[in-house]
Amino acid sequence: DADVTQTPRNRITKTGKRIMLECSQTKGHDRMYWYRQDPGLGLRLIYYSFDVKDINKGEISDGYSVSRQAQAKFSLSLESAIPNQTALYFCATSRPGLADTGELFFGEGSRLTVL
Amino acid sequence: EDQVTQSPEALRLQEGESSSLNCSYTVSGLRGLFWYRQDPGKGPEFLFTLYSAGEEKEKERLKATLTKKESFLHITAPKPEDSATYLCAVQALVGKLIFGQGTELSVKP
Image 1 (cartoon, rainbow over the protein chains, first blue to last red):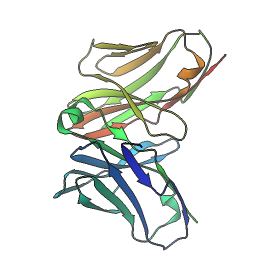
Image 2: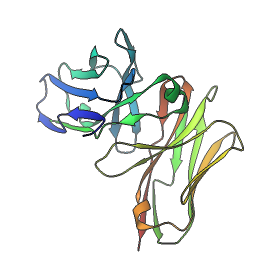
Image 3: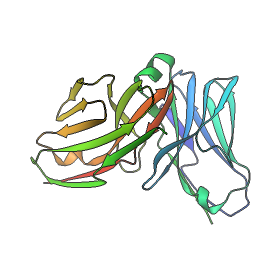
């Protein structure tokens, strides 16, 4: 089983629908992240959380919200999806020492298509 | 503004043909430069961390080097299994990485 699990892996939805992407991890890491990957733009940070009570915006948080339900679970929501949110979404984890080394552990991604 | 630019966007090599990938960066207060490998349909996988100019790291056929303005990922005698997208990232604030757009490497037998 993967250490960082994302569900769903693929989702097609319509403009205006609410979507939730879920991430769970078995690595025991405190820090969790949501990134978005678009062709030619690389990975961009949406939100990150250093522990259950800590939530921080990344560089592209508009139109997204997150919930850290437990140390092991971090969900990303699109309240009203729009086509330019079509992308590949990645969840990642790290622990404090590893975060300083830049070592993040990524899930396998959730491909979202908004029609 | 912190920024990372990778070149080339795509690179095709024959097996055994050595080459280098480039990562240029501008960041206020570099805390580290990182290389990741990403296979199709997978999440990125960590390769190296470099902290200061002149530092080098090696792993099998890969060697990463760092200057004050850029990093190179040298691939010596590549094999088809080295085909992947290679991502470069910098860290200015703890826990927040800024990624480049990646270089897609294809190694043909």
